[in-house]
Length: 298
Image (tube, rainbow, N blue to C red; front, top):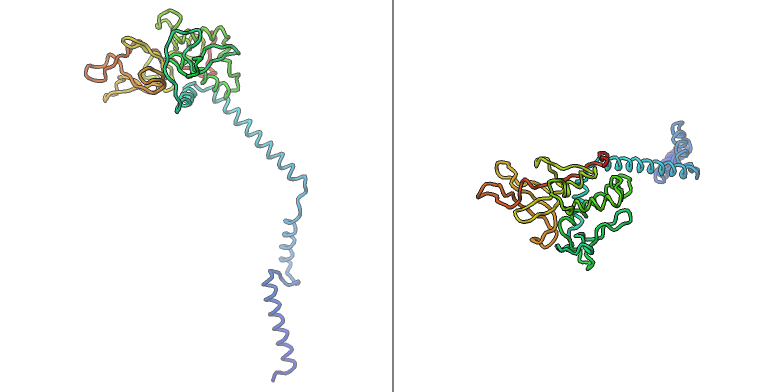
C-alpha cells in the first residue's frame, strides 16, 4: 500500500497531466508563460485591433485615383497609337463587320436616290451618299469602298480623340468633291487622279502606292479589265512558283459573287498557259490613307 505522502505526490502528477491534456485540447497555454509568449500575444492583439473607418475610405480613394490615372495613361497611349497608325488595320476591321449578312450587288444610274452605299453616309450633318431607299443594303464597288473608308476614318478618329467627322479639316464641299473623285465621276482620266488613290492624295490623307511590292492589306485599289473596271480593298498578291506577281486577292462587291465577297483576279500580261486574266497591270491604282500625324494641307 502506498504511503500517504507518495499518494499525494502521485495525485499532483496526475492532476498536472490532466491539466496539460485539457490545455492542448482547447488550444490554450497555462497562465504562466515565457516573455516570448507574452510578445507573441501582444503581436496578436495588435493585428486584431479594429482599423479606423476612415482608412478604408482613404485607401479606396487612392485606389480609385490610381485606376483613373492608369486609365488616363492607357487612353493617352491609345490616342498616340491611333494618330501614328495608317488606316489599313481599321479598314480590315471594318470589312469584317459585314460578315454573316446579305449585301446584294446593284449598279444603276439613279444617282439622285442611290450612291452605291449600304447605309447613308453623313459628314458634318450633311447627307453625302445615299443608300438604296428600298432598304436592301445593296451596294456597288466604288460606293462600298468609299463607305469602308469613311467608317474606318471615323473609328480611327474616335480612338485618336478627334471629332469623328473631321477628315483633315475637310469641309462639306471638300467631301463632296472627294467622293466624286473616289467614284471616278469627274469626267477626267484615271491617270490624272480621277480615282480613289487620287482622292486620297488630293486631300492630304495619304498617297498613291506606285510599286506593287509596297502594297499592303487594307490598301484601296482601282483597276481596269479588258472591258470593265472595279474598286476594292486589297488583301494580298498572288504569285507563281518563281515569286512573280501574277494576280491579287481582294474584298469588294461584284455581280459575279452576287454581292460582298472575297475574290481573286489575274493580270492580262501573264505568260500564255499560266495564270491568264483580264486585269491591265498598268491601270492598277493603289491608295493608302496614312497616319493622322502625316496629313498634309491641301
